[in-house]
Image (tube, rainbow, N blue to C red; front, side):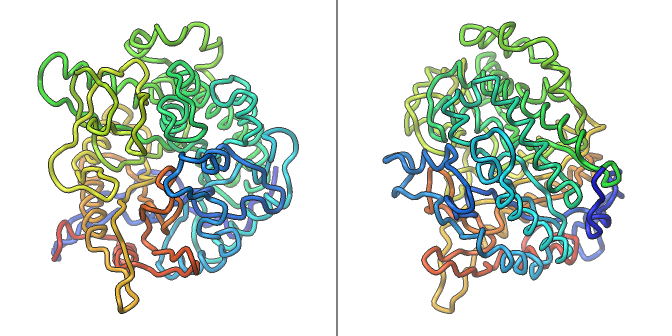
Length: 499
């Protein structure tokens, strides 16, 4: 077994936390070792797209295809984190972050998706992890945040079973390289987006629009997760007490009315958005209603091989939950258009990201919205957490992404004031606190995002960061929300509303 990096041994045990409290000063206090962090993704911030052996991923190809990304933006430079990571870690330390969730670029460390790793690529993540540990920040590594090596896509991509096998091999390479430094591991980030936006509606890379392929991709992403869990368990040092997880963007789905048709529409979306992943991962089965709804698109008996469900349901230690807004749905004709506010929220397509549920109509809930046109509703996060907590009380949860985009700008004083983001995060943290108080085992919260970045099909037009990035100069400016978040971390508490 590999020896554990000396700075990695101070991370805490995965065990139930003490309950939160409401202090006399009105603050909502979180459990004593609640993990406060921020998150990013490799293609969105790293840049250095062709340096040190890195080859194109599907997002390189997609962003360089005219008409795919707003303004023709690409991730070639992004926030230049590859060259500025030391300064960025110092910035994190200055904000008091306890943890940092980053993703590994698959094509940076294994350019073809097969064979041995490129040491120059691995060295970047070794240096980044060492810098984090030296700053007292817990590294949380995500193996896959949507950047499949283009060679694997050319060979079939996620609709092809072989991709899951390659992902397991890749996971072992990263585990062997970083296992002495990293305790917290996430296999996949939001496989819903990879499967349905990438292969269904085509608004994400690789831009395919085949509902059958989208469902095949969903299964093979699940299988890839299982293969990665097994691979990590086989190479990570037991003395590091590794914590393995997957991050899902679970959908809190509400029906527009109590009619049977609208309730059935909500059921369909719940099956495609949630239970297609939760079922095989946590219950070792695909839901019968999902299989029935989509039987005309895929032969599930042929798709799911003997042993697949056992592999997919390999035990995990945590479940990552990403949440931004709830879904409001009804039955209808479901013709995709700009007037149908579908929850993919990353661009309108003539093709639905909901295979077999094209007739379902998505509605924009009333109330405030972010710059992404997503509704602001923290009750959806509370309800989602309590649902998971009730269905799987033995499984600890981590909020691995939550945040909002607003139209941020630098004022004449050189500041970036974003009170809307502070209000958004405060209200969602209050919802998390309420869920913990009701018995849900939530272990931490990761703000999305640490810094402004390449926002996929929106290019650089949407800003989610707590830190403003001037892309021309690469100057970082902490927004008022960054200072507020630093104070929240220091207090380990949040007020329910503006004082």
